[in-house]
Amino acid sequence: MSASMPFRALDLMVLADVNHSDNDFRFFDDNGTEYNQADDGWVRRRNSDFTSLRTIAKVGRRGGTHRWQVHDLHDASHKGLPGIGNFQSLHSRFDTWRNLTEALFYGPLSPTSAYRLRAYHSLERGTFKDLRGEVGAAQDHDQTTTRGIGLHGEYVRHMGNQRLATLFLDARQERFDGEDLLQDGAPEPNARRRVASVGGELESPLGYGLTAHIGGQWEGFDDRFFDDGNFVPAAPFSPFHDQRGLWGARGGLSADLGWGWSLKTHVGRYVRAPGFFELFGDRGAIVGNTDLTPETGWHRDAGLQFRGRQSIRTIEIVAYDNRVEDLIRFVQNSQFVSRAHNIGEASLRGIETRAEGRLGLMRGISVSLRSAYTYQRAENRSAFTFEKGNDLPNAPRHHVQVHSSLNMGPWNVHWDLRREGRHYLDRANLRTVPARTIQGMGLRARLGLGLSAALEIRNLTDNQVADLWGYPLPGRTVQLSLSLEHPSTLISHVSRGTP
Image 1: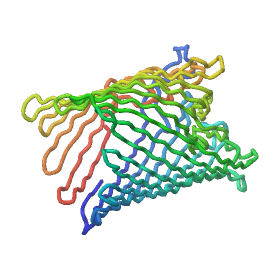
Image 2 (image 1 turned 30 degrees about the vertical axis):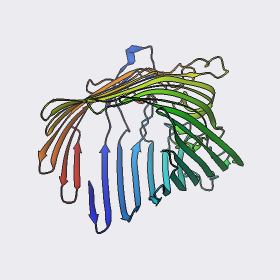
Image 3 (image 1 turned 60 degrees about the vertical axis):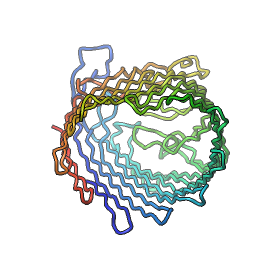
Image 4 (image 1 turned 60 degrees about the horizontal axis):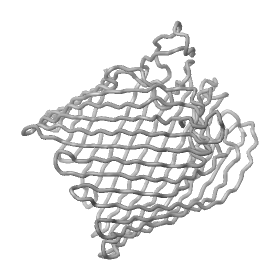
C-alpha cells in the first residue's frame, strides 16, 4: 500500500509492502551424481520460505529556489536457506534488517552555480542460524551488524562558453561488529573504516561538435580490521591498522554527428577497495576474506548512439576493453560456500547493444519493443596454469533481454525473454551452470474508478533453470494482482496472489 499527498507546504509519500511465499517449487535433482541418471528425479525445494516487509517514507519541502528532502527505508526479512547442494538444509535460517535514512538539500547559489548536499545513516543487521552445520562448514549462530554514516557535497558552476565544472567532497565511516551467539565470552570481531574523497569533473566544448570530458578523484582510507576473514570463534583475532590513498582519472570525447547520432569514447584508470560484504560476508553461504587487496584497472570504451523522436527512440552500440589487476570475484568451493578472492590479472572485453522503439498501428493502438544484447569475454589471465585463459566465475558470455508490449487503450499485453549463456562457478571451469532461457508474459487492464487488474506468468515454458550461483529457480509461476488508486490522495493498494 502506498499514499502520496501534499500536506500544507510538505510533500509526503509512504509505502508498505508485505510478501510471503513457501517457495516450495519442484526442481530436477541429479542427487549429486552428474553422470548417473538412474537416481535423478523431481523433488520439492525445502526450507526455502520467506517473509519480507518494506516500508518507505519521504517528506520534502521547497523554500524559494531551494529544496530539502528526507527519506527513510526499512527492509526486514525472515527466510530459510535450503543450500545449493543435493542434500538440502532443513533448519538453517537467515534474518536481515536494513535501514537507510538520508537527507538531501539542493538549490542554486547564483545564476551560474548550484549546490547539492547529502547526509545519510545506514544500518544492516544479519542473523545466521545453522545449528546443525547444514550450510556452512560447522555449527554456526552469528549476528553481524554494519553501520554507516556519511556526508557528500557537490558544487556545480557554469563557466561560460558552455563549460561546466563539478567539484565534490565526501566523508564517510563504516563499522562492522560480529557476535557469536553460540558461545558466551567468545571474541567479538569488529572493524572500522573511515574514508575521505575529493574530486572533480570538467566538460568543455572544443568546437565542430566535439566536447571533452575529464575528471579524477582521490580517496584516503583509514582501516582498522581484525585479521581473520573466516570469523572462526576459536581462532585468535589480531587487529591491524592500514592507511592508504587510492586515485583514479578518466577522460573522454563526444562528437555530435547530426541527425540524432553521436559518438563517444572514454579511457580511465580506477582503483576499488574491497567492500565490507566482500571482507566479512553475510555469515551464511558467503564467507568474508580480510586478506583482499584493492583491484586496479584501466577501462576503454567507444560507442555510437542514436536518439530519435519517431518510431526508433534509441540505438546504442558500445565496445569496451578493461584490464584489471587483483580483480575481486566470489568463487564457490566444493562445500557450496562462496568467498571473495583476488584474481591476479583479468581481461574483460565485449560489446553491448541496446535498442528501443515504438510504433503506432492505429488510433489508440501501439507496439513497443526494448531489446539488449551483451557479449563479454571475461578471461582469467593469472599466472596459474590450471586457470589461465579460463572464463572468470559467474561471467556468462552471452546475455539477451527482450521486452515487447501491445497497448490497446486500457489493455496492455507484454512478452519478455531473457537468456544467459553457460558459465562457471569455479576458477578451473569444472563446475558448470547451464545456459538458461526464461520467458514471461502478462496482461494488464484498467477497469475504471482507479481499479486495475494484472495477470503475469513467469517462466512461461516451465524450464529447469538456475541463477548465477547455481541455485535452482522456480518453474512456471502465475501471479494475479489488483490495484486500487484513490485519485484525491494518490493512495494505492495492491494485493497479490499466486495460484
